[in-house]
Length: 94
Ligand SMILES: [Zn+2]
Ligand SMILES: [Zn+2]
Image 1 (cartoon, protein in one colour):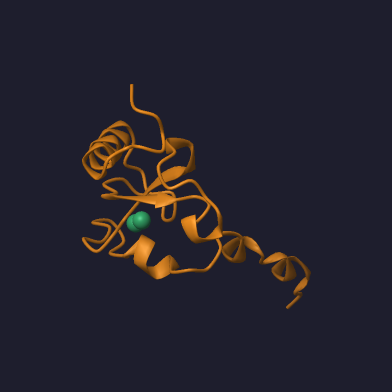
Image 2: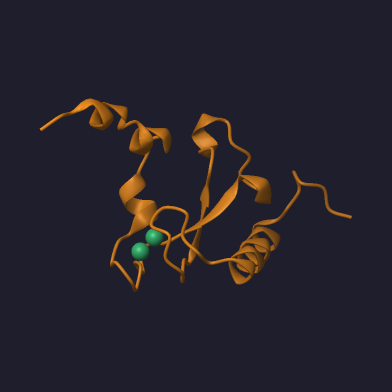
């Protein structure tokens, strides 16, 4: 039985395909038809590259057919939380 760390590139691709077959709703824009697997905690920041618990569907270079975004590409290296830190808006009064 293959352990997590000796997942081959082929096995990794198969696992990702299975993951996207189970759920292809992009975690960044919320639309279906995601074709890449994004890492919730980026690998560069210590996230597990081959742990499905750290995976989320996202649109890649083929772009979202609904909103046209390259979600995974747009995100770049920014941490996900930076998108959500808009608490200032609550205090802005017209
Ligand atoms: Zn998307
Ligand atoms: Zn979209």
